[in-house]
Image 1: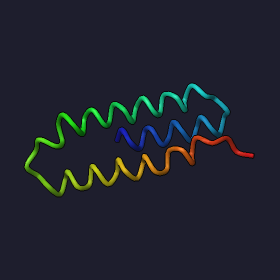
Image 2: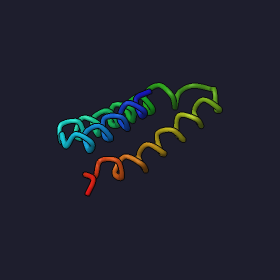
Image 3: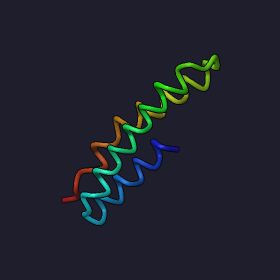
Length: 71
């Protein structure tokens, strides 16, 4: 949910030309990284960990493309 929220903030920041939303999306990704390190890595459910890392990595890949302003 944190990764999806960050992507939504990045998209809306580029759409409405609001840099605060874009900056907030990176802060939300940092919060997601903190949660991955503190909670998800210490669980025994490997499928849930794999899906969390996949969603986080995908969001990190897409985030810079969404935060660019449209030409």
